[in-house]
Every structure is written in C-alpha cells, then in structure tokens.
Length: 338
Length: 137
Image 1 (spheres, each protein chain N blue to C red):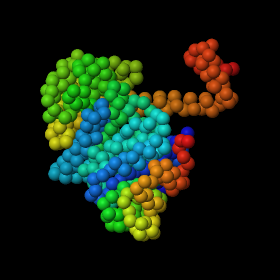
Image 2 (cartoon, helix red, strand yellow):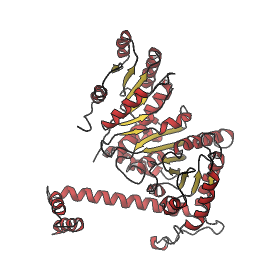
Image 3 (tube, chains in turn blue, yellow):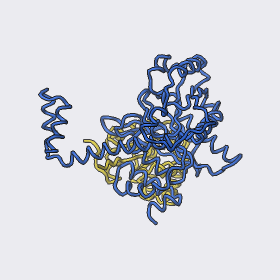
Image 4 (cartoon, rainbow over the protein chains, first blue to last red):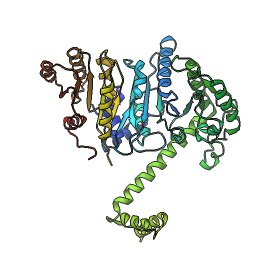
C-alpha cells in the first residue's frame, strides 16, 4: 500500500511520517499531499490564538476532552479531533522546545485524538510555513475538527485567521488595557473572544472592557471584498444575521465555561454554513495560500536562475548606500529581463 | 528546499518528580538546532510510545531517577517495536546502576548517561545515533 492509501485507511504511523515530509518540504511528501487534496474540505478548522501564558494549551486540552465526551453521551461517538500546536523556533540555532503536550496529557490514549507539535521554523505570523499543508493532510485523514494552536506571540499572529474557519482569541485578566485591545489586529480576527482565568480578580473589568471595545472596533469584514473577487454566485442567506463576536469567560483548569465555548464554536460553524461565509472564507483562505506559494516559488526559481553573485553584488551596493534596497532589486530583475 | 530537523522526544516515565536534568538536556538539544518535544512528568510507556508516533521523532530520551528502569524501558521498547517504530533510537539518562547498563543496551537502548555526563556528549551521541549531521557548528 502506498503512503497515501495508508493515510486514507487511518494508519497513524503513515500519517505521522507524511506530516514530517510535508514539514521538511520533501518532494515525495508534497506529491502525496497533492494526491490527498481531493479528500480535504470536510474538517472544521478552529484556530486558537492569544498571548503567551493565557492558557491556550490548557483550554485546547479541555475543549478536546469535552468534545470527545459529548460524542460519547449523545450523537457521534467517533468525532475525530486533531491538534496542531505551533511553538517558536530559536532564530539563532533553529532549534525549538515544543511543550504544548505537557498541558494536553489528558488526551493521551484516545485513539480518536492526534496531536502534532510544530516548530515555527522561522515563519512569523504565529504559524509555520507548512502548517497549512499539515492541516490538509489531517483533513484528508478524516479528522472532523482540527484545532490549530498558534505561537503565543501577542499581536501579530493574524495568519491564523487566513488558515482557520473559526478563530478563537484567548486573553486573560491583566494582560493589557483597552488601548492594547484596540490597537491589536488580534481583536479584529476574533470570531470568539475568551477571557480565560476568569476566576482572577479583575476578570469582570476585562470582560466589560473587551465588550465595549468590540462594539467600536469590529470592522466590517468580507462584505466589501466580495465584488472584487467576482463572486456573484454566493448569496448570503436572508435568515442569517451577521455574526456578533461573543465575549466568553472560562476557567480552563477547572473546565468552567468550556461547554459554552464548544457551543459557540459549533454555532459559528453553523453560521458560516448558513450565511454562505464558509465558502467565502474558503476562497479567501485558498487564495492567500496560493499567493504565498506563488511568491515563494517565483523567488526561489528566480534566484536559481541568477548567475552566482548577482544578488551579493547588489547587496554590497546597498550596504555602501549607492543603491536603495528597492533599486537593487529592480536592477536585478531588469537585468534578468534583458 | 528541504529542511530536515532532528526531532527528539524527552520524556520522564514513572513516578519521580525531578525534571531539572531532563530540562537541561532538552535545552542543550534545542541549542544544537534540534526540535525537542517535552512531555512533562509521570508519563507511562504507552503515553511515550504514542507521543513518539504522533510526533514522528527520530529519538526518545528517557530520564529515570526512580529505579524503575528495568520495568519501564523494556515495556517502551516492546511498544515501539509493536507499532512499527523500530527506527526510533532510545537513550536513557538518570540514576542507572552499572550492572543494568548492559541489560538496557541488549534491549536496544543506544546509550545510558549517568550523572555528570556533559550535554555535549549527549547531543553528539544523539546526532550520531540518528545518522544526522550537526545542525549548527
């Protein structure tokens, strides 16, 4: 059996090996991913982001536990859940310590749960470059929900909003005042806002401040970009109101508020599907993935074709201030054209 | 444009609660450019084998100070074999009596590190064991 067939048949060892090949950008792995691509598109991708120490991993642990238990009690006992947890790589050595599993030990031994730690490997924005590919492979392998936990960087990890269907932003009391909340793009990407550690004094203030800020700061998303994308086929359902970002309180360590948060995640999925925004987001997500690939591939191909030293030569000129970085790049590009 | 990294799982099986050594080793591996998955205290061999599988690691480093190594290590080796993870290299560190070292190696353990081992020795051994090259020199 080929690796692709084994992954589709639910072989976890094969899946794990494929994820490594995708991470390492090995050609065989990327070819296998392409073969798996027709099997993707069914999973609900849930992003979990927030500053370090707000309790992302602990909350993900509890969310997955509850989702699995719900499955046992009613409905679908076979809900398959994958977790992709991204931690930062050292910019100096390229090494990383991936510690998210420490908080997810309750999930050990569950055959319907698969956890994969990823190092960011130099990518900014809270995810690794290969995260999208890893998520696709998990999607094809049949996971119903894929939780993506970002690097806890703070204000810049907005890549998750382009990767996930539902973005949960976690904060905690005392993590910053209202001004922080307004300036950070992090609020704008939130489909659901969670104040974790809500048993800490001051949590009420944080909740109130966030709700007040949201009323002012919530931008009008998606609608203005529609006509440009030429997407007349998608009509918004009449009955679906626009999504109001809920602000929820949880105490992840105690499991408080977790059931409500799962409900909100599920509500958001229903909203996306009923309103047609699921399709719009899919389009946006795939568009940005393709644009990124185009950029990377073009740059790689271009540099491959360059006679050795052209780039370095230009770099020297920029260093001595005889060219600006922009002029240098243009001169390399024009040289190529001639 | 491949960028293979050595991935190592550092685990503390059994019941002792001292993970200072495990953390020091994890850090020195990170500083050598490896990706280290640290799973925390009180792991069962089953949990370790499962984590090793999901994370597709090249090596597992076990830190054992409890004296239970002759129970924990054979169990883990058996699980790894059963799951088809024969390629995963296992290294042990901690308080291991001399007479147990050959027995652990018979089970397939690559190396046993006692107190006082330099982190460089450990890192170099891991790199050699997984057949990789030093990531950063």
